[in-house]
Length: 200
Length: 192
Image 1: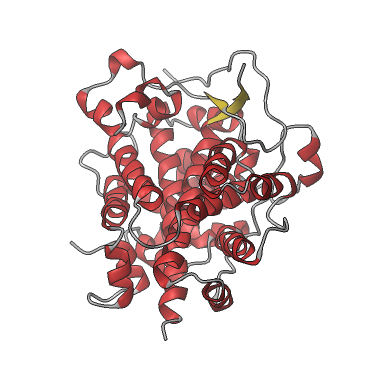
Image 2: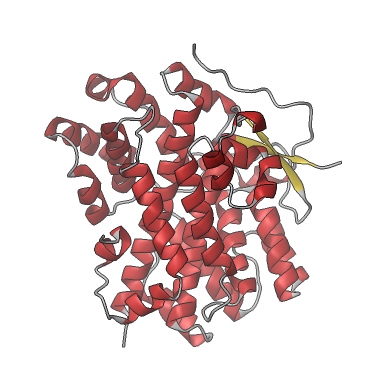
């Protein structure tokens, strides 16, 4: 029998980029918790994610989900050297802003604001987009994320040069490449398998 | 076992970029595990190896990455490679474009190509792959246009819900892998 898409329950869709907490409603059926095997549960990595319809949907292909999640965690959470956490989150938020993923942008704008304490700058990125006036270091990071995200890709030696001038070493630049590239993965899943909803 | 990102960038053992990637050893290991689980899985499930490599070749072609394209298309029969090359030529455009939910962001809406597989190649690709290519083009160039009917089109073409998860992960993973490779290649080329 052919599967059918889901009709999300009545909800309010966010119509602006926001740092508010959002929900996410799937368009195709996540796994039911009682149907999940040990392998499916292990693929969530964090046991609490069993409550998330997004992760229970991705758990249908558990090996890919687990590898995706462990890639994500090292790019963003590994504290050793490289780019400060706030700026990895800035790259994620800028990528999400350009691709138009309101859900992903909300999560990573919150993280960028929390870790940098630059709430106004982060909000300006959400409100005005990737051309927002920030400071030279953040604008260089946003510009590099944009050049990696837009097609055809325009990332070139001039971006590396600009990042070096604002103090990024090669490990930090590699982190930026990882963070912006990873959000080209995450944005596409979030945007295409369901939709965001405002909470409350 | 060799690492696909290292291979495509040309990162030599002992090089500076090798050392930098080693500082993110979990990301390196699991980016490779993502590749393996998508292209050499323990169980192909409902998505055949040829479907996986055909979509990958199409994605790489859309990104204009000849080395990555060659890597994936080398696994395909010649007839399929020819059909994909023709589809890539018709489908390549600029991105990201698309529409937002109606409201203040509507002023940022931009339109672009709404790609459909050519009549001539529908037979070569078959119904499932033709539907997958049309969905893939949206994911690559205008993901914010995604909506439930796009998934229904895949279901109607014979993709199960679980197959759709695998297909979506494959296209999305490649959107990551191709950018990491392109970015690290520029970084490698700028070593002083």
